[in-house]
Image 1 (cartoon, rainbow, N blue to C red):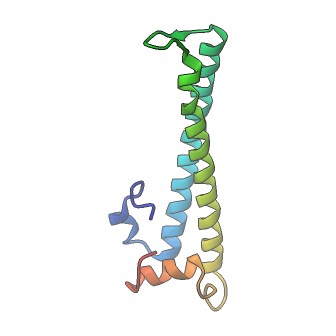
Image 2 (image 1 turned 90 degrees about the horizontal axis):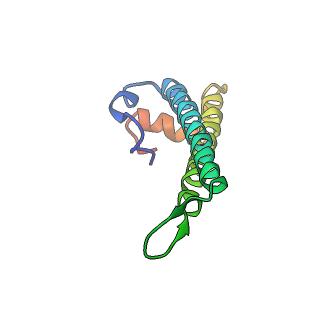
Length: 120
């Protein structure tokens, strides 16, 4: 429901088009931050790999293997933010259509939510 990353108290006060714009800004910032973290952590993994750093423990494992999941996770988050950005851009465009958004569309559910008729 995207409730864990949003300030719903403020967003619920905005009109549907304003909420769609705010969500687009949120998705752009989220994608940029995650892309930056992806790049930074990928560099760290590559550094550990080239220096052949070993994580000494019960089983000796190359540290790059352990850290490798971190940039992968940030890559997936970046993709998710970009997919959500596309979703809100389409909704914003649909809200401006003459006659309103198509029935059953995400834009229509956002407008219904703002009138108190349901959860989007």
